[in-house]
Image 1 (cartoon, rainbow, N blue to C red):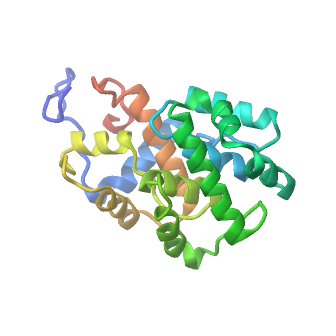
Image 2 (spheres, helix red, strand yellow):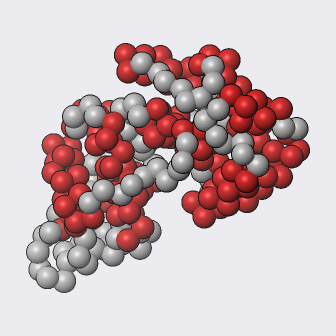
Length: 231
């Protein structure tokens, strides 16, 4: 169903506007409740998973993460971090092969973990909330880390309020006429951050709920029947 198509019930489709983003969150949360995302045992696992999630699905990420965990490379300890950084890149690449682009990602993962070790020491790591934008800029300077990956690291790995914009978010807003194909990542991020309380737990749940909406209803071929946003 396109954004302008009337549902079979005869009702006009629910159309979001920027000032409705808070209401949309409430509707999604009322339907599905807490999503328990990001599924991980350690901060290091979350951060590695955010990078490995680039250009692949979660099933592949989970297998790559499991391979690293089996070698005790994702624990929040200095020994585990040292072992990861000392692992030869070909071995690291083979371990994360299921995630795709494994040679490229092995270099990115090694670079990211080295950066965190050099600047923050051993995990678990902390970044002051007052410095979130400074660290966002620094992480974005690392080769291979785009805004979605960096915001995922900061939101889920460091519990800092950076809203994550992904393909599901963009599709939802496009269908409701709130953005165009030319709308930038930063413009969409600001749209959500301006409309919501600046709280990481809300950003966390909202992003996870949008992902669920995108998988169950707002697919490439939309399934608007029983969509929480039409309720």
